[in-house]
Image 1 (tube, helix red, strand yellow):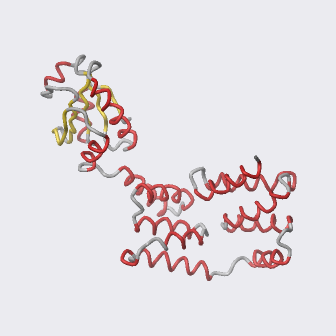
Image 2 (cartoon, rainbow, N blue to C red):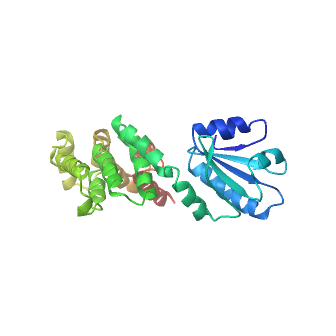
Image 3 (spheres, rainbow, N blue to C red):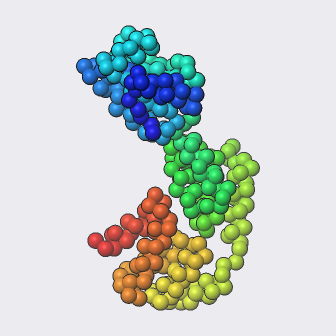
Amino acid sequence: MHIIDVTLDNAQQYVIDESFKRPVLVDFWADWCGPCKTLMPILEKLAEEYNGQFLLARVNADDQQMLASQFGVRSLPTVMLIKDGQPLDGFTGAQSEVQVRDMLAQHLPKAWEADLQEAQALLENEDFSAALPVLQRVYEESGQQPQIACLVAMAQVELNRLDEAERMLATVKLADQDTLYEQVKAKLELKRQAAKNPEIEALETELENDPESLPLNYKLAVQYHQEGYQREALECLMVVLRKDLAYEEGAARKTFNDILAALGKGDPLAIEYQRKLFTLLY
């Protein structure tokens, strides 16, 4: 629950008691107040974006005059940030989204920090496929911080997406190349040096001599998929699907879609190859 309408009956629970668990942003408003109607959507948007890091408590000052009086409200809109039962910050009058964000930023973790913690827990549990899309989103939302770039690259290395990991590490400037960077780079180099499955190597050699062979591309795609080389698998399957969308009674297309589903809708690799398939179909 991120947003609540507060009355005299529930004010103790949702304004005072709740403020000992997380900050409560109390918005005093009224139907006749134009600036209130401008401000309210901004506060609601931020409450959803912060995903529960604070509670937005809306108080209709006309219906709840006693509450407004108890909080010393003299004009509308009035917004108060309550923490541990005490006013921490606030403002009166209309404010821009940037101004409200600036106030919240002084007292709350950034919206993406909770997602980063979630991703780090996934990394610790070696759930790299689930961690990667979260880290990629956090990387962008954090302003492409170098430490997060290294975490993205770490997940990519574990998922055998070595070219992507190399490109991500290349964005980290020399001054930011810390211990984590060195660890991820070393893992990447070890993965590069590790011998592939002999069956994959044999199929790759055959494919070099007959790159348009549908049976070879399909068989190699299946092997790549099993070994975690998803980009390579998808590329081989695209060779097959460009020539025969119904290859092996639809098995190639099913494998292609299964890989996309396993990657997840938000994964850039899945998005890239979903677009390629869409272009092929339409």
